[in-house]
Structure formats: C-alpha cells, structure tokens
Image 1 (cartoon, rainbow, N blue to C red):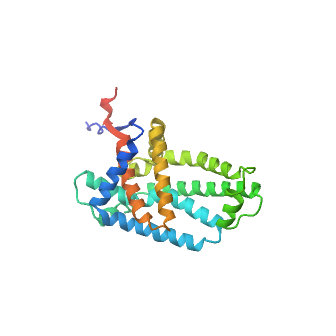
Image 2: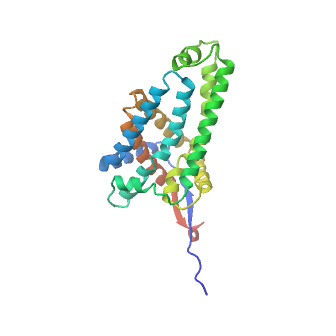
Image 3: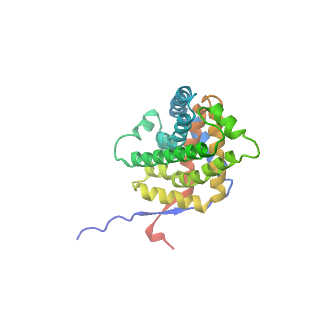
Length: 261
C-alpha cells in the first residue's frame, strides 16, 4: 500500500495589537542594517526609475499619475528579492545580493500573474480618477500645476479634491488588503494566488487598527521618499520591504491540520 500523503499546513491568521507595525519597522531596519547591499541596490534602482518618471511626465499629469500609481502598486512585487533576504536572515543563513536575485528564477508564473492583477488595478484607478477630474473640474488638467490649482486649491465651494481622496481611499483599501501579505506568502509557500489573496484579506480584516496604521506608515514614508526627489526611496523601499516580510510572518502562522481545535 502506498503511504498516505504528507500533512499539509493550515494557515492561521493572528490578531495583533494596533501598535504592532512599529515592531515590524524595527525588525525591518535591523535586517537592512545586517545586509545593506541588496536593499540599497533595490532602493537605488527604484529611485532612478522614479526620477526618470518624474522627468518624462513633468508636463503630463495623467501620465505621471498613472506611472506613480503603478509604481506604488508594483513596488512590493519588485521587492520580492528583499523578502528572500529577510527569510534567509531569520533562518540564520548568509544573505547576499545573489539571494535576492535568486528569488526571481522562473520557477512559476505566480508572481507575474499577481503583478498583472496589480497593474490592472492601478490602470483602473487612473482611468476612474481621470474621469472624475475631467467631469467635475472647473478647467482642464494637463499638468501637475493644473491639478494643484484647479483641484487642490479650488476653494471651499468645490469639494472635488475631497471626493478624489475618498474615491482613492475606497479603491485602495481592497487592493491593500489583498496584497499586504500576499507577495511574501507567494515567495514563502507553494500555494496559488487565490490562497495568498484570501489569506491577505483575512489578515487585514482580523487586524483593522494595525492595518490602518501600517497603511499610514507606508504612505507617509513613501511620500517622504518621493518628496526628496526620490533620493529617500533608496532607504525607504528596502526598509518597508524587510518590514513587510516581518508583517507577513507575524500575521500568518502555520500549524498542522491535526492541531485544529
């Protein structure tokens, strides 16, 4: 008789204190300090790419908005190699730039499929945003200065900017929830995209306060990195990437099926 199949792990989402993201930041910073070269190389590449986008789209607001929306959505995917660094460090193994690059060996297409889903989500946001602004703005918006003058500084009688922010929050929330631990999980486990996404959503729903703080921290640090003409992204991107690995490891635990209650 053939032996029974091995017991597969069950994934258990953990509820954590709302201040837990601060622990993730501390652990992520420690990983970056222990193995700085791969992280800084990823951050430098992101900064150069972002700087190129700013230069190319400086006079074309919707191109710039679309490019940065895509950048924000795909950046966690591009940081996959840094999750591998944190995983190696957690297991006491030596981690190098080769460790990060090895995470991109074409073993399967799960990360590519997930990246395409994120890209589609970003395209949907840009198109929806453009439709809202085009329909209700008091003047055409063709450049970042136009957006600042016509939308942001339009005055108290025009609530277009507030509506734009609310729409962005409503659309961003499910994207954030479905991806917050999905990409590290795809790297770490052999499960499919659907399992990773549903686990990520469960983790977000089980920790609304912690996830709200984590999203705020990610947005604030990213905006800070961009405000320095992308120079700050050299450090911000790897710091957040390593921290995101620890968020995944904290939020999603494994236990044998036989240990179910």
